[in-house]
Length: 162
Image (tube, rainbow, N blue to C red):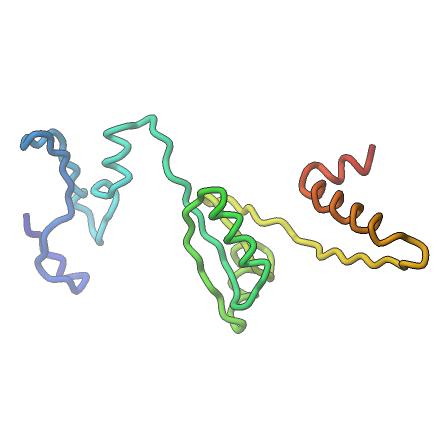
């Protein structure tokens, strides 16, 4: 099925469509509507998967905006990988990072993570502790640091408030 898309600079081309074929028999076709432009609305994989199994969970759409050499970005990517999330990384240059992230997320620092269009990144606060070993035993300080590390991220602020 050829269509003329000269107005878009494509010339004559095959129109987009997809088909569900079972045992050599075409069961369903998905043909793009004949509208101006270059539509890509129904012949995509998501439409086909939704037809085959409408109740199936859709894969999460994950993007992470990063900057080169960012240790927080590396940690965020490791966390996404450990969670089994397939993501697209968008490294941003120093010249454009703050403007792009400011427009998209209202933030200027990386990493910024979006899952299914929802902003997921939280501000990270670096924490630094020092101990005067004349007053506090080193082993006790190490136990405190380990307890603190284990409790951060587990309703820690709530636990402190109680």
